[in-house]
Image (cartoon, rainbow, N blue to C red; front, side):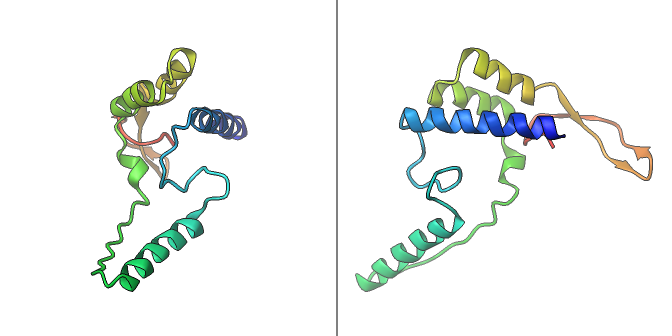
Amino acid sequence: MFLSKSCEKIVASQLNNQLCDNNLQELFQSAYKNGHSTESALIRVQNDVLRAIDDDKCVILLLLDLSAAFDTVDHGIFLSRLSMCYGIEGTGHKWFRSYLCDRKQFVVIENAKSSSHPLTCGVPQ
């Protein structure tokens, strides 16, 4: 467990550096950016709402719970975007592919194991 988490942190750091160095980070993304957090994202939203109110504009705030968003990421689409949008190719792309592809999931409850099913979406746990 320790080794896999360490490896994940190293890859995340290298990927973040790649995105920063090549100016590929999303403008309004707060995660994984220095000086950004959930708090800074909320402050940005609050500021935008207050400025719109000050300008006598109508404001509607719709909040979505995206806590399980990574559970729905299709591996094929993700790998394609890594290559086409972010220039992740070669060994780096092969590493992501090996990390995501050919995974199976199952459930164990009180020593009873379910049948395994292919994992085509989400992040392996």
